[in-house]
Length: 222
Image (cartoon, rainbow, N blue to C red):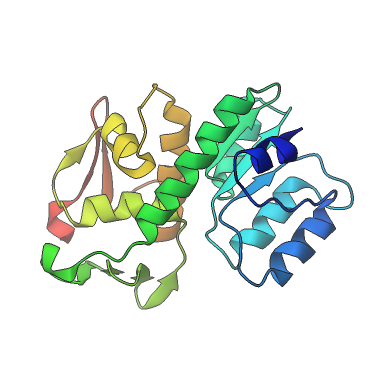
């Protein structure tokens, strides 16, 4: 149902009917994919395992499509690096809109940032080094691999140290979409970002929470 509909919308679609086939096609693709639509309940290898394999080598947008619509499954899927989650049953119109938005965000994030627009290409914050042109991040000299969303959030903070951002502002800027109050998406991405950047994520050194307001980059670290 999904494939033929997307083909009519002008997309080139590849099909995989189990997890192992999905991993094989992804690894052997010569030109790469602009987006992956991933079910969770797959034969041979489940969707979460496939997602982990994809995230080990690629930041391609991944949209989870599944009947498992519980909050735990949503948090787990987004925590492993999924970019969006759509529960069955779903509207093909909504699916197409989310696909377009995900590809648009990925293309926007992938565009190099003119160094003249920033004070410096490589921004040093305590033990962090963030390169806004190559999208590389280091913590205490060790490379840190971020998803496109995680880097988008971090970039907001390091280019505006001390400024407080609400969840709505973060979502509007990084997701390039209207915020409908789904705090779970922001919370999961912030937790994952802190797990990668902080020595003690429960007591963050860099990105501070202002309860009831939002988040900010600690000025003392800038």
